[in-house]
Amino acid sequence: MAIELSKQQLRRDTIRKRDHLIEKERIEKSEAITRRLFNIEMVAQAEDILLYSDFGSEVKTDQIFYTAKRMHKRVFYPKVVGNDLEFYRVEDLGELQVGFKGIQEPFMLKKTVGDWIFAAVAVLPGTVFSRDGYRIGYGRGFYDRFLARYPSVFKIGLAYDLQILEHIPHEYYDVRLDGLVSESEQLFWSNSSK
Image (cartoon, rainbow, N blue to C red; front, side):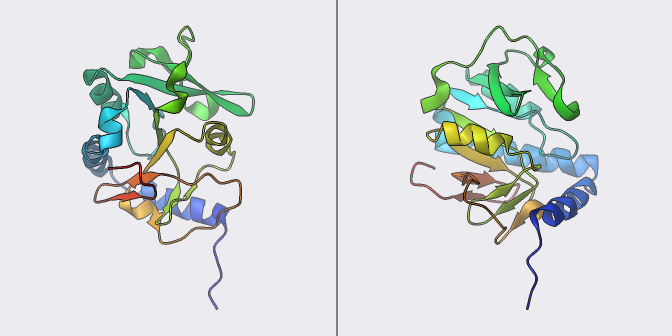
């Protein structure tokens, strides 16, 4: 009988695999993911993008920011405030500085989030993703708490192929994604995509 790996073990194993990608591979795969992301109709039409600042070996997001700005979209980045995420509009990547756990966060907090709650696309990081729409983050639950408050936000995870498994353990409070984009495929679990 197979023993189901814990979230912690899956997280550790997948980050180790992801860390073994050389920089050139990460750049090439991230560029392919960016192209696939903007080919999704929901993303192409969205006015507001909630984006994360990549950290370590995560899928790189700077090109997503620049593409979104060229398309005249508003882009928001998260800042950890207590046990929650708050999103702030960012016009230039120079408005980010090292924050929680060494991750780039907005520090010019003059432009807070507005009415994006109903029509935004949230682009999400994670360590492991499943083919049935779940993700394992870094264990603090920031995104799950945020997304539970804003269920109408369209949620898309970004992953390298090596981060995608058939199934992963999940709890009742884990928020299911609407879509997942990797360098070689797009997966969707709602009718509001494509």
